[in-house]
Every structure is written in structure tokens, then in C-alpha cells.
Length: 429
Image (cartoon, rainbow, N blue to C red):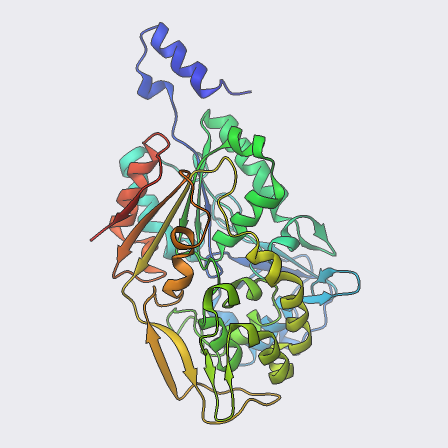
């Protein structure tokens, strides 16, 4: 077992050692968002929509995010492979029969078949890790680890593995414990986007208060959709590219993948934050956040209407109850503003079964281009006040741009070398 950090410091002081050498870096655990968690599948005779979809058994293959998988007809194979079904009678999730799915690049961002880390993690985290290496000597696989997950799932699906689905939280807990024991310092968890509600559930529901006090130095939450965002409603109705280039993610990509996922409930606008503001406007009716479950049932098959509606019934209320700072956690809520973000979407026809249309007009508001400001600001404006929470705001930075913004990376490097901070709010210009 590693020597406790305070004992290391005491021994260094007694024997006149350099305390900077006595204490290692805080291990950094990166929990990506939806687009930053790679997924690969292994098929065992699974039924596919096309013959050319079939792959050799026992051969893991990357499917998220892979440009090959979004080619015409190939995307049908992708949708089948990522299909998640929910059975309300047994309260369980399942993949397509005879198919296994796992996160790609656990801990080091590298597939088993490769020697270098995956291009997905390069794209999102290269600038951050390069700067942290230069500033503090962080090394991937030594004191910084990537913890991807099955982003289709909300927190209930991560607690244990059933039907070959889920079980992320036990692996995450073990990774943090091993990193802390190896480095002799409590860990910092850095989450982005969907990774933030994923970690919020982990801290509230999965680990004990004693465990958090022992293993966690702090939590940096980047661009969190604390109460969802209107953009996911737009994706239900007519597709959306996640803010990524269209050459990587076609317009209809997310709609067909995300709509049957339980995590979509967390990403949808929550009535407690968005209230009675109209989000979808049609000739005969306005739809608010509270109407989204009815909306997806109305459009039917294209959004897995009945399943999605059942997931809203199961998950949305409990998720709203999680909106508070976890005990024994120093939360640093960092987000960006100044990027136009859709608030309301106008359509020239009423909704119907099979609806698939882009909006004719968008009313824009403030946010990071993906998450609305009202959701980003939940922590400082709505959550119970506590000294364990601080906020930093980075103007004129996008939802994905925050991962490579030098103001953010510099603030992170500074934080990783500082003691626990008390409550504060800062604006970065």
C-alpha cells in the first residue's frame, strides 16, 4: 500500500527532503462526454441489416466514432450495433442479441490492437495532455487516465453489468483507487459534457462519503448539461451533428443512435430549469420541456417513442433530485458562454408519427453552442449554497472548444498544483 500523502510530507520535513519530490501529482481521471467515449463491438453471429455488416467472430471493431461507420448503408450496421433496448417489466437494458459492447481505450486511450492512442482521444484531449505534461510532467497511463464508458446509459445502467450491458462504476472506482495508491495522492476527476451527470450520479449514489474523503481531491466539471439542453429535442425531431464536422458526423447520425438511449433523458431539457418556455412551436401547439415525453411518443418509431417515453418516466424525476453538491467533494464548475445556442424551434407542420424535419426557424439564446445558459448556471443559481463549490466562466468558447482553450488548460494546470480551494466565482476574459 502506498504511503499516505500527509505521512510522506511529514517524513520529508523531518529528514529535510524536498517536499516537491515527496509528493506526486494528483492522479487525473478524465471522464469524457458522449462524443469522447469510444465504443467497440464484438459479434457472435448477431443478426445484421446487411450481409456485408457481418464481421469475424471474436474480433473487436471500433464503431464510435469511426468515419467508416457513417458511410451510406454502413450506418445501418452501426445503428443495429448500438441499439439499446429497455424492458420496463424487468427494469433491464440489453444489446442486440449475440453482440458485446465495451468502451474503447480504457485508462490509456489505446485499443488493444494499436500502439498509439485512438484518434478520438487525440482530437479531444491532445492540447490538454500536452500542456499538462510540459507543466507538471503528467503522463498518460501513469498519473493521468481516460475513463470512457457506454454513453448510451444513464447512471442506473452503470451500477452493475446485466445482460452484457453496463457496469462502468465498479471499474471507475477501481481505477481511481489504483491510481491513488500508485501515486500517493487523492485523485482529481475531470469530466466533460455528459460525463458530468455521469459523475454526479457516481458521487451521490454509488460511492460512500468516507470513500470520497479518502480518494478524491476535487472534481472539475466542464460544460455540464446539469439540467439538459434544447438541442437534444432538436435531434429527436430532425437530427443533429453534435456540433462536430459533418464529414465526421452526418446530420441524421445522432437521431438514430441516441434516441433509444437512457442518457438521452439526462441530455433533454428538464422542466425544473426550462419551465414553461416553448421549445418546439408548431402551427397548432407549443411544446415545453414537460411535454418532451409526449412529443417523442407522438413521433413514434423514429424516436423509439414508447421506450423513450418509459425512460423519461423512470429517470427524469430522480435525476432532478440529484442537483446538489456531493458530500466531501470540492466541485469546480467550469463552463463557457457567448455562443449562440438554440432555445426554441419553429416548424411549419404539426408533429406526426414518423416526423423527420429540420426546423424552419431557430430562436437563439446564450450558452456554449450546445448547452443552454440556464442549464450551465444551475450550480451557482439553483443548487443549495455550499463552500465546497466554485465556478469559473470562460466567455466566447464553445462546448467542445473548452477542451483545448488555453485559459481552461492553464487554470487546470494551476489547480492541479494547488491545495483545496474554498467557494469562489471567477470570470476569465
